[in-house]
Length: 484
Image (cartoon, rainbow, N blue to C red; front, top):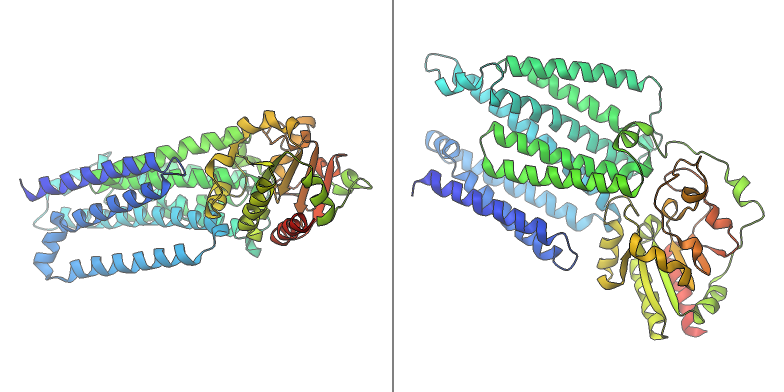
Protein backbone atom coordinates (compact mmCIF):
# COMPACT_ATOMS: atom_id res chain seq x y z
CA UNK A 1 0.00 0.00 0.00
CA UNK A 2 1.14 3.55 -0.73
CA UNK A 3 1.63 6.10 2.03
CA UNK A 4 -1.44 7.96 0.74
CA UNK A 5 -3.52 4.80 1.15
CA UNK A 6 -2.27 4.30 4.71
CA UNK A 7 -3.19 7.88 5.57
CA UNK A 8 -6.70 7.44 4.17
CA UNK A 9 -7.04 4.20 6.13
CA UNK A 10 -6.03 6.01 9.31
CA UNK A 11 -8.58 8.75 8.57
CA UNK A 12 -11.25 6.10 8.04
CA UNK A 13 -10.38 4.45 11.36
CA UNK A 14 -10.51 7.83 13.13
CA UNK A 15 -13.89 8.59 11.55
CA UNK A 16 -15.29 5.24 12.71
CA UNK A 17 -14.05 5.94 16.24
CA UNK A 18 -15.77 9.35 16.17
CA UNK A 19 -19.07 7.74 15.19
CA UNK A 20 -18.76 5.13 17.94
CA UNK A 21 -17.84 7.88 20.42
CA UNK A 22 -20.96 9.87 19.53
CA UNK A 23 -23.10 6.80 20.09
CA UNK A 24 -21.54 6.02 23.46
CA UNK A 25 -21.72 9.64 24.64
CA UNK A 26 -25.49 9.61 24.21
CA UNK A 27 -25.84 7.79 27.56
CA UNK A 28 -24.37 8.67 30.98
CA UNK A 29 -23.22 5.10 31.66
CA UNK A 30 -21.05 4.94 28.54
CA UNK A 31 -20.17 8.62 28.12
CA UNK A 32 -16.73 8.30 29.74
CA UNK A 33 -15.76 5.46 27.44
CA UNK A 34 -17.12 7.37 24.46
CA UNK A 35 -15.03 10.40 25.37
CA UNK A 36 -11.88 8.26 25.55
CA UNK A 37 -12.63 6.64 22.19
CA UNK A 38 -13.22 10.05 20.61
CA UNK A 39 -9.87 11.27 21.99
CA UNK A 40 -8.16 8.19 20.54
CA UNK A 41 -9.74 8.90 17.16
CA UNK A 42 -8.46 12.48 17.26
CA UNK A 43 -4.94 11.28 18.17
CA UNK A 44 -4.98 8.96 15.16
CA UNK A 45 -6.19 11.77 12.90
CA UNK A 46 -3.44 14.14 14.12
CA UNK A 47 -0.73 11.51 13.62
CA UNK A 48 -2.03 10.72 10.14
CA UNK A 49 -2.01 14.43 9.27
CA UNK A 50 1.68 14.60 10.25
CA UNK A 51 2.42 12.19 7.40
CA UNK A 52 0.41 14.15 4.85
CA UNK A 53 2.48 14.79 1.69
CA UNK A 54 2.30 18.56 2.32
CA UNK A 55 3.84 18.09 5.76
CA UNK A 56 6.43 15.53 4.71
CA UNK A 57 7.33 17.71 1.73
CA UNK A 58 7.88 20.70 4.01
CA UNK A 59 9.99 18.56 6.32
CA UNK A 60 12.11 17.37 3.41
CA UNK A 61 12.60 20.91 2.14
CA UNK A 62 13.21 22.62 5.48
CA UNK A 63 14.55 19.91 7.73
CA UNK A 64 12.64 18.83 10.84
CA UNK A 65 11.40 22.31 11.76
CA UNK A 66 7.81 21.94 10.44
CA UNK A 67 7.36 18.65 12.33
CA UNK A 68 8.84 20.16 15.48
CA UNK A 69 6.46 23.11 15.23
CA UNK A 70 3.48 20.77 14.81
CA UNK A 71 4.55 18.78 17.85
CA UNK A 72 5.08 21.94 19.89
CA UNK A 73 1.67 23.30 18.87
CA UNK A 74 -0.04 20.01 19.79
CA UNK A 75 1.75 19.94 23.15
CA UNK A 76 0.88 23.55 23.97
CA UNK A 77 -2.74 23.11 22.87
CA UNK A 78 -3.11 19.87 24.79
CA UNK A 79 -1.62 21.43 27.91
CA UNK A 80 -3.99 24.40 27.72
CA UNK A 81 -6.97 22.10 27.18
CA UNK A 82 -6.02 19.82 30.08
CA UNK A 83 -5.48 22.81 32.37
CA UNK A 84 -8.88 24.28 31.47
CA UNK A 85 -10.62 20.94 32.00
CA UNK A 86 -9.00 20.36 35.40
CA UNK A 87 -9.22 23.87 36.81
CA UNK A 88 -12.56 25.07 35.48
CA UNK A 89 -15.41 24.21 37.89
CA UNK A 90 -18.35 22.08 36.80
CA UNK A 91 -20.55 25.15 37.14
CA UNK A 92 -18.48 26.74 34.39
CA UNK A 93 -18.86 23.93 31.86
CA UNK A 94 -21.31 25.94 29.69
CA UNK A 95 -18.78 28.77 29.46
CA UNK A 96 -16.01 26.31 28.62
CA UNK A 97 -18.12 24.69 25.90
CA UNK A 98 -18.78 28.14 24.45
CA UNK A 99 -15.04 28.89 24.36
CA UNK A 100 -14.22 25.56 22.73
CA UNK A 101 -16.88 26.20 20.08
CA UNK A 102 -15.23 29.56 19.38
CA UNK A 103 -11.75 28.06 19.18
CA UNK A 104 -13.03 25.51 16.67
CA UNK A 105 -14.48 28.24 14.48
CA UNK A 106 -11.26 30.28 14.68
CA UNK A 107 -9.12 27.27 13.77
CA UNK A 108 -11.27 26.52 10.72
CA UNK A 109 -11.11 30.12 9.48
CA UNK A 110 -7.33 30.25 9.93
CA UNK A 111 -6.86 26.93 8.11
CA UNK A 112 -8.95 28.20 5.19
CA UNK A 113 -7.00 31.47 5.10
CA UNK A 114 -3.64 29.68 5.16
CA UNK A 115 -4.70 27.27 2.42
CA UNK A 116 -5.97 30.16 0.30
CA UNK A 117 -2.65 31.98 0.63
CA UNK A 118 -0.75 28.79 -0.25
CA UNK A 119 -2.95 28.14 -3.29
CA UNK A 120 -2.60 31.71 -4.54
CA UNK A 121 1.18 31.44 -4.21
CA UNK A 122 1.21 28.10 -6.05
CA UNK A 123 -0.88 29.53 -8.89
CA UNK A 124 1.46 32.46 -9.56
CA UNK A 125 4.99 32.77 -10.87
CA UNK A 126 6.84 30.86 -13.54
CA UNK A 127 6.21 27.45 -11.99
CA UNK A 128 2.46 27.95 -11.72
CA UNK A 129 0.46 24.88 -10.71
CA UNK A 130 -2.43 23.94 -12.98
CA UNK A 131 -4.29 22.41 -10.02
CA UNK A 132 -3.92 25.62 -8.03
CA UNK A 133 -5.15 27.70 -10.96
CA UNK A 134 -8.18 25.40 -11.30
CA UNK A 135 -8.92 25.82 -7.58
CA UNK A 136 -8.97 29.59 -8.01
CA UNK A 137 -11.40 29.48 -10.93
CA UNK A 138 -14.73 31.30 -10.38
CA UNK A 139 -17.26 29.26 -8.39
CA UNK A 140 -14.88 26.38 -7.82
CA UNK A 141 -15.51 23.99 -4.92
CA UNK A 142 -12.37 25.36 -3.29
CA UNK A 143 -13.58 28.96 -3.51
CA UNK A 144 -17.07 28.18 -2.20
CA UNK A 145 -15.75 26.07 0.69
CA UNK A 146 -13.17 28.73 1.58
CA UNK A 147 -15.79 31.48 1.67
CA UNK A 148 -18.17 29.46 3.85
CA UNK A 149 -15.39 28.43 6.22
CA UNK A 150 -14.26 32.01 6.74
CA UNK A 151 -17.79 33.30 7.32
CA UNK A 152 -18.99 30.53 9.65
CA UNK A 153 -15.66 30.39 11.49
CA UNK A 154 -15.66 34.12 12.22
CA UNK A 155 -19.32 34.10 13.25
CA UNK A 156 -18.73 31.13 15.56
CA UNK A 157 -15.67 32.67 17.19
CA UNK A 158 -17.18 36.00 18.17
CA UNK A 159 -20.65 34.59 18.81
CA UNK A 160 -19.07 32.13 21.25
CA UNK A 161 -17.05 34.87 22.93
CA UNK A 162 -20.24 36.89 23.47
CA UNK A 163 -21.98 33.77 24.84
CA UNK A 164 -19.04 33.18 27.19
CA UNK A 165 -19.35 36.74 28.50
CA UNK A 166 -23.07 36.32 29.14
CA UNK A 167 -22.71 32.93 30.82
CA UNK A 168 -19.79 34.16 32.93
CA UNK A 169 -21.97 37.16 33.85
CA UNK A 170 -19.21 39.61 33.04
CA UNK A 171 -20.24 43.16 33.77
CA UNK A 172 -19.96 44.29 30.13
CA UNK A 173 -22.36 41.57 28.96
CA UNK A 174 -24.99 41.55 31.72
CA UNK A 175 -27.22 44.03 29.92
CA UNK A 176 -28.54 42.75 26.62
CA UNK A 177 -28.23 44.91 23.54
CA UNK A 178 -31.82 45.94 22.84
CA UNK A 179 -31.33 48.91 20.49
CA UNK A 180 -34.25 48.82 17.98
CA UNK A 181 -31.77 49.70 15.23
CA UNK A 182 -29.98 46.39 15.69
CA UNK A 183 -32.21 44.69 13.11
CA UNK A 184 -31.22 47.26 10.49
CA UNK A 185 -27.57 46.77 11.43
CA UNK A 186 -27.93 43.01 11.06
CA UNK A 187 -29.71 43.48 7.72
CA UNK A 188 -26.86 45.66 6.46
CA UNK A 189 -24.30 43.11 7.61
CA UNK A 190 -26.28 40.33 5.94
CA UNK A 191 -26.24 42.20 2.62
CA UNK A 192 -22.48 42.78 2.96
CA UNK A 193 -22.05 39.10 3.82
CA UNK A 194 -23.84 37.94 0.66
CA UNK A 195 -21.89 40.39 -1.52
CA UNK A 196 -18.56 39.25 -0.08
CA UNK A 197 -19.52 35.57 -0.39
CA UNK A 198 -20.15 36.12 -4.08
CA UNK A 199 -16.89 38.10 -4.42
CA UNK A 200 -14.80 35.34 -2.80
CA UNK A 201 -16.48 32.63 -4.89
CA UNK A 202 -15.93 34.57 -8.12
CA UNK A 203 -12.37 35.70 -7.37
CA UNK A 204 -10.80 33.53 -4.66
CA UNK A 205 -7.33 34.83 -5.49
CA UNK A 206 -8.24 38.23 -4.06
CA UNK A 207 -7.50 37.39 -0.44
CA UNK A 208 -8.65 40.80 0.79
CA UNK A 209 -12.27 39.79 0.09
CA UNK A 210 -11.82 36.62 2.18
CA UNK A 211 -10.49 38.43 5.24
CA UNK A 212 -13.14 41.11 4.89
CA UNK A 213 -15.75 38.34 4.84
CA UNK A 214 -14.22 36.89 8.02
CA UNK A 215 -14.46 40.33 9.65
CA UNK A 216 -18.14 40.62 8.67
CA UNK A 217 -18.75 37.14 10.10
CA UNK A 218 -17.08 38.16 13.38
CA UNK A 219 -19.25 41.27 13.56
CA UNK A 220 -22.39 39.26 12.88
CA UNK A 221 -21.40 36.87 15.65
CA UNK A 222 -21.44 39.82 18.04
CA UNK A 223 -24.61 41.53 16.80
CA UNK A 224 -26.61 38.29 16.67
CA UNK A 225 -25.59 37.05 20.13
CA UNK A 226 -25.55 40.24 22.21
CA UNK A 227 -29.36 40.78 22.10
CA UNK A 228 -30.16 37.21 23.20
CA UNK A 229 -31.40 36.91 26.77
CA UNK A 230 -30.11 34.49 29.38
CA UNK A 231 -33.20 32.28 29.14
CA UNK A 232 -32.29 31.34 25.57
CA UNK A 233 -28.60 30.65 26.16
CA UNK A 234 -28.96 26.82 26.22
CA UNK A 235 -30.29 27.01 22.66
CA UNK A 236 -27.53 29.41 21.60
CA UNK A 237 -24.83 27.06 22.93
CA UNK A 238 -26.28 24.20 20.84
CA UNK A 239 -26.46 26.40 17.74
CA UNK A 240 -22.88 27.64 18.11
CA UNK A 241 -21.76 24.05 18.58
CA UNK A 242 -23.40 23.24 15.26
CA UNK A 243 -21.71 26.24 13.61
CA UNK A 244 -18.29 25.05 14.77
CA UNK A 245 -18.95 21.65 13.20
CA UNK A 246 -20.15 23.17 9.94
CA UNK A 247 -17.03 25.37 9.80
CA UNK A 248 -14.83 22.32 10.34
CA UNK A 249 -16.65 20.35 7.62
CA UNK A 250 -16.22 23.24 5.17
CA UNK A 251 -12.53 23.47 6.11
CA UNK A 252 -12.27 19.75 5.31
CA UNK A 253 -13.36 20.50 1.74
CA UNK A 254 -10.85 23.35 1.56
CA UNK A 255 -7.86 21.14 2.41
CA UNK A 256 -9.37 17.94 0.97
CA UNK A 257 -9.34 16.15 4.33
CA UNK A 258 -11.97 13.42 4.67
CA UNK A 259 -11.81 12.99 8.44
CA UNK A 260 -12.39 16.71 8.96
CA UNK A 261 -15.44 16.58 6.70
CA UNK A 262 -16.88 13.59 8.57
CA UNK A 263 -16.13 14.88 12.07
CA UNK A 264 -17.43 18.34 11.25
CA UNK A 265 -20.60 16.93 9.73
CA UNK A 266 -21.22 14.83 12.84
CA UNK A 267 -20.81 17.83 15.14
CA UNK A 268 -22.87 20.09 12.86
CA UNK A 269 -25.74 17.63 12.54
CA UNK A 270 -25.84 16.75 16.24
CA UNK A 271 -25.76 20.44 17.16
CA UNK A 272 -28.69 21.21 14.86
CA UNK A 273 -30.68 18.26 16.24
CA UNK A 274 -30.00 19.36 19.80
CA UNK A 275 -30.95 22.93 18.91
CA UNK A 276 -34.30 21.69 17.61
CA UNK A 277 -34.83 19.63 20.78
CA UNK A 278 -34.04 22.62 23.00
CA UNK A 279 -36.38 24.90 21.03
CA UNK A 280 -39.17 22.35 21.41
CA UNK A 281 -38.45 22.00 25.13
CA UNK A 282 -38.85 25.77 25.51
CA UNK A 283 -41.76 26.04 23.07
CA UNK A 284 -39.68 28.56 21.14
CA UNK A 285 -38.88 28.90 17.46
CA UNK A 286 -35.28 29.38 16.42
CA UNK A 287 -36.23 32.75 14.91
CA UNK A 288 -37.79 33.71 18.24
CA UNK A 289 -34.58 32.75 20.03
CA UNK A 290 -32.34 34.73 17.68
CA UNK A 291 -34.49 37.84 17.50
CA UNK A 292 -36.97 37.68 20.39
CA UNK A 293 -34.67 38.67 23.26
CA UNK A 294 -36.34 36.54 25.97
CA UNK A 295 -34.86 37.40 29.32
CA UNK A 296 -33.40 40.75 28.35
CA UNK A 297 -35.48 42.83 30.78
CA UNK A 298 -37.71 42.28 33.79
CA UNK A 299 -41.31 41.98 32.63
CA UNK A 300 -43.32 42.45 35.80
CA UNK A 301 -43.01 43.70 39.35
CA UNK A 302 -42.61 40.80 41.75
CA UNK A 303 -44.32 42.71 44.57
CA UNK A 304 -47.66 42.36 42.77
CA UNK A 305 -47.27 38.57 42.84
CA UNK A 306 -45.60 37.99 46.21
CA UNK A 307 -47.04 40.69 48.51
CA UNK A 308 -48.27 39.09 51.75
CA UNK A 309 -48.28 35.57 50.30
CA UNK A 310 -44.74 34.29 50.93
CA UNK A 311 -44.41 31.65 53.67
CA UNK A 312 -40.86 31.17 54.91
CA UNK A 313 -39.73 28.06 56.78
CA UNK A 314 -36.63 26.92 58.66
CA UNK A 315 -34.73 23.64 58.31
CA UNK A 316 -36.38 22.10 61.39
CA UNK A 317 -39.92 22.74 60.07
CA UNK A 318 -39.12 21.25 56.67
CA UNK A 319 -37.41 18.27 58.33
CA UNK A 320 -40.64 17.48 60.19
CA UNK A 321 -42.56 17.48 56.90
CA UNK A 322 -39.98 15.21 55.23
CA UNK A 323 -40.09 12.72 58.12
CA UNK A 324 -43.66 11.87 57.17
CA UNK A 325 -43.09 11.80 53.40
CA UNK A 326 -43.19 8.58 51.39
CA UNK A 327 -42.14 10.14 48.09
CA UNK A 328 -39.86 13.13 47.50
CA UNK A 329 -38.85 14.65 44.17
CA UNK A 330 -35.82 16.92 44.02
CA UNK A 331 -35.71 19.51 41.24
CA UNK A 332 -32.18 20.87 40.59
CA UNK A 333 -31.51 24.19 38.87
CA UNK A 334 -28.62 26.51 38.15
CA UNK A 335 -28.66 27.72 41.77
CA UNK A 336 -27.62 24.21 42.80
CA UNK A 337 -24.67 24.44 40.42
CA UNK A 338 -23.61 27.86 41.71
CA UNK A 339 -23.75 26.66 45.32
CA UNK A 340 -21.91 23.42 44.46
CA UNK A 341 -24.64 21.60 46.36
CA UNK A 342 -24.76 18.40 44.32
CA UNK A 343 -22.89 16.33 46.92
CA UNK A 344 -25.06 17.72 49.73
CA UNK A 345 -28.17 16.82 47.73
CA UNK A 346 -26.89 13.27 47.24
CA UNK A 347 -26.35 13.00 51.01
CA UNK A 348 -29.90 14.26 51.66
CA UNK A 349 -31.22 11.68 49.22
CA UNK A 350 -29.31 8.89 51.00
CA UNK A 351 -30.66 9.96 54.41
CA UNK A 352 -34.26 10.05 53.14
CA UNK A 353 -33.94 6.66 51.44
CA UNK A 354 -32.48 5.16 54.61
CA UNK A 355 -35.79 6.12 56.28
CA UNK A 356 -37.77 4.30 53.60
CA UNK A 357 -38.63 7.32 51.45
CA UNK A 358 -38.63 7.09 47.65
CA UNK A 359 -36.44 9.85 46.15
CA UNK A 360 -36.22 10.86 42.50
CA UNK A 361 -34.74 13.79 40.60
CA UNK A 362 -36.78 15.74 38.03
CA UNK A 363 -34.64 17.00 35.13
CA UNK A 364 -35.90 19.71 32.79
CA UNK A 365 -34.23 19.72 29.32
CA UNK A 366 -33.01 23.31 29.72
CA UNK A 367 -32.33 23.38 33.47
CA UNK A 368 -29.01 25.11 34.08
CA UNK A 369 -27.20 26.85 31.26
CA UNK A 370 -26.69 24.10 28.74
CA UNK A 371 -28.33 20.79 27.82
CA UNK A 372 -27.42 18.05 30.27
CA UNK A 373 -25.95 20.47 32.81
CA UNK A 374 -27.88 18.99 35.75
CA UNK A 375 -27.19 15.42 34.65
CA UNK A 376 -23.45 16.08 34.67
CA UNK A 377 -23.50 17.72 38.11
CA UNK A 378 -25.52 14.91 39.68
CA UNK A 379 -23.38 12.26 38.00
CA UNK A 380 -20.33 13.94 39.54
CA UNK A 381 -21.96 13.39 42.95
CA UNK A 382 -22.57 9.69 42.13
CA UNK A 383 -26.35 10.00 42.01
CA UNK A 384 -27.66 6.83 40.35
CA UNK A 385 -28.78 7.47 36.79
CA UNK A 386 -31.98 5.51 37.41
CA UNK A 387 -33.12 8.24 39.80
CA UNK A 388 -32.91 10.95 37.13
CA UNK A 389 -36.31 11.33 35.51
CA UNK A 390 -36.98 13.39 32.40
CA UNK A 391 -39.78 15.96 32.40
CA UNK A 392 -42.29 13.95 30.37
CA UNK A 393 -41.82 10.88 32.57
CA UNK A 394 -42.08 12.55 35.96
CA UNK A 395 -44.74 15.21 35.36
CA UNK A 396 -47.69 12.77 35.66
CA UNK A 397 -46.39 11.67 39.09
CA UNK A 398 -46.19 15.07 40.82
CA UNK A 399 -49.80 14.79 42.01
CA UNK A 400 -48.72 11.69 43.95
CA UNK A 401 -45.62 13.37 45.41
CA UNK A 402 -45.57 14.29 49.09
CA UNK A 403 -42.77 16.86 48.87
CA UNK A 404 -41.08 18.50 45.88
CA UNK A 405 -37.81 20.24 46.75
CA UNK A 406 -36.80 22.89 44.21
CA UNK A 407 -33.15 23.92 44.52
CA UNK A 408 -32.18 26.98 42.53
CA UNK A 409 -34.61 26.41 39.65
CA UNK A 410 -36.97 29.17 38.58
CA UNK A 411 -38.30 29.48 35.02
CA UNK A 412 -38.54 25.70 34.48
CA UNK A 413 -41.02 25.42 37.39
CA UNK A 414 -42.95 28.64 36.75
CA UNK A 415 -46.69 27.82 36.43
CA UNK A 416 -47.23 31.08 34.53
CA UNK A 417 -46.12 29.12 31.46
CA UNK A 418 -49.39 27.18 31.77
CA UNK A 419 -51.74 29.77 33.23
CA UNK A 420 -50.77 33.16 31.78
CA UNK A 421 -51.08 33.47 27.97
CA UNK A 422 -49.43 36.90 28.10
CA UNK A 423 -46.31 35.63 29.87
CA UNK A 424 -43.04 35.63 27.87
CA UNK A 425 -42.71 31.91 28.67
CA UNK A 426 -46.35 31.04 27.85
CA UNK A 427 -46.53 27.55 26.38
CA UNK A 428 -43.08 26.55 27.55
CA UNK A 429 -43.20 22.99 28.96
CA UNK A 430 -42.40 23.07 32.67
CA UNK A 431 -42.03 20.67 35.57
CA UNK A 432 -45.44 20.51 37.31
CA UNK A 433 -44.02 20.81 40.83
CA UNK A 434 -46.95 23.00 41.90
CA UNK A 435 -49.14 19.88 41.84
CA UNK A 436 -47.18 18.23 44.66
CA UNK A 437 -48.76 18.22 48.12
CA UNK A 438 -45.95 20.40 49.51
CA UNK A 439 -43.34 22.38 47.60
CA UNK A 440 -40.12 23.53 49.27
CA UNK A 441 -38.18 26.15 47.27
CA UNK A 442 -34.56 26.70 48.24
CA UNK A 443 -33.36 30.11 47.07
CA UNK A 444 -31.27 32.99 48.34
CA UNK A 445 -34.01 35.50 47.51
CA UNK A 446 -37.10 36.10 45.37
CA UNK A 447 -34.97 37.27 42.44
CA UNK A 448 -36.32 36.27 39.01
CA UNK A 449 -34.80 33.66 36.73
CA UNK A 450 -33.29 34.13 33.28
CA UNK A 451 -36.65 35.17 31.81
CA UNK A 452 -36.79 38.12 34.21
CA UNK A 453 -40.33 37.45 35.47
CA UNK A 454 -41.75 36.63 38.93
CA UNK A 455 -42.77 33.09 39.76
CA UNK A 456 -46.31 32.56 41.20
CA UNK A 457 -45.14 29.20 42.56
CA UNK A 458 -43.30 31.02 45.36
CA UNK A 459 -46.61 32.51 46.60
CA UNK A 460 -48.71 29.34 46.21
CA UNK A 461 -50.62 27.98 49.22
CA UNK A 462 -48.67 24.71 49.20
CA UNK A 463 -45.21 26.33 48.90
CA UNK A 464 -42.67 26.99 51.65
CA UNK A 465 -39.69 29.23 50.87
CA UNK A 466 -36.38 28.18 52.42
CA UNK A 467 -34.13 31.24 52.05
CA UNK A 468 -30.45 30.28 52.25
CA UNK A 469 -27.39 29.35 50.23
CA UNK A 470 -28.19 26.10 48.41
CA UNK A 471 -25.40 23.99 49.88
CA UNK A 472 -25.78 25.26 53.45
CA UNK A 473 -29.55 24.89 53.27
CA UNK A 474 -29.36 21.24 52.25
CA UNK A 475 -26.65 20.41 54.78
CA UNK A 476 -28.70 22.00 57.57
CA UNK A 477 -31.80 20.19 56.41
CA UNK A 478 -29.99 16.85 56.37
CA UNK A 479 -28.66 17.46 59.87
CA UNK A 480 -32.13 18.40 61.09
CA UNK A 481 -33.57 15.13 59.73
CA UNK A 482 -30.81 13.04 61.30
CA UNK A 483 -31.21 14.66 64.71
CA UNK A 484 -35.01 14.91 64.60
